[in-house]
Amino acid sequence: MSRLLDGKSAIVTGGASGIGRATALAFAREGARVLVQDRAEAGAQETVGLINAAGGQAVSIGGDVTREADVQAMVARAVATFGRLDCAFNNAGIAPAAAGPTMQRTHELSLDSWQKLIDVNLTGVFLCMKHQVPHMMAGGGGAIVNTASIAGLIGLPTAAAYVAGKHGVIGLTKTAAMEYARDGIRVNAVCPGFVLTPMTQDGAARRGEELLNKVPMHRLGKPDEIAEAVVWMSCDRASFVTGSFYTVDGGYVAA
Image 1 (cartoon, rainbow, N blue to C red):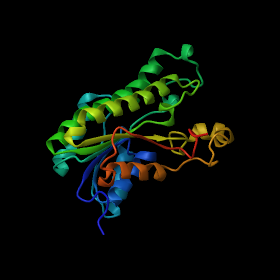
Image 2 (cartoon, rainbow, N blue to C red):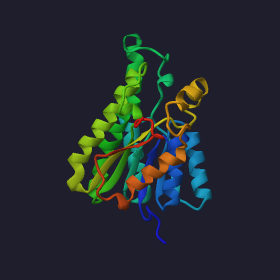
Image 3 (cartoon, rainbow, N blue to C red):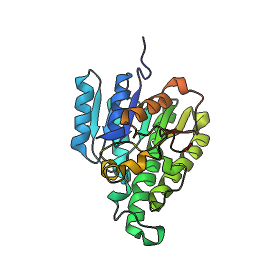
């Protein structure tokens, strides 16, 4: 029985932990050869170790998605290693707490905090697509999935920069989907809700019951649950799906 991504090669950014690691593992399980990128290169190497130990094929690379030279090097490494690029999961991102003080209203937010969140969460996605698309065009097509968020669909008080960046990811995804549809490149986004990862565990510890009460399923998501949606959007079974954004949120947005 063939696997969903047999014969394909993929890039996963932010693959050292959380949703990125879960997706890299799921890609490999479904037959893809995977380049795992993360600024925390040791964590990316650990992900690669897990893939290779399970019989998959993966390599790692460090770098910062806000630096164009690093993104170029990442894509070039994937193509040089695997011969082509079929799938990309542009997942690298940061939470508001990584950019400065939290729980600030818009007028209280510093320009530095705003810029850091936009640089990583939005500009990083743009740079990845900018350098992935030409290789996919040369190879006859491909599938890109960008990590947005339920914050790309709704407002969240005291998270202005994060919300703006994630709304931007959805707009960028829709536009790229239209631009490259005739080149055989599908571009979609995944919109996780509250998922328990290393990036979110501090907030979940502080606001656990408050968050659960907003989720109809009354639990946090698991990285594996996001990964399954990304795998499906990346495989040929989703051949007529582009310009879409899929919420994986336990019903949060529907409530």
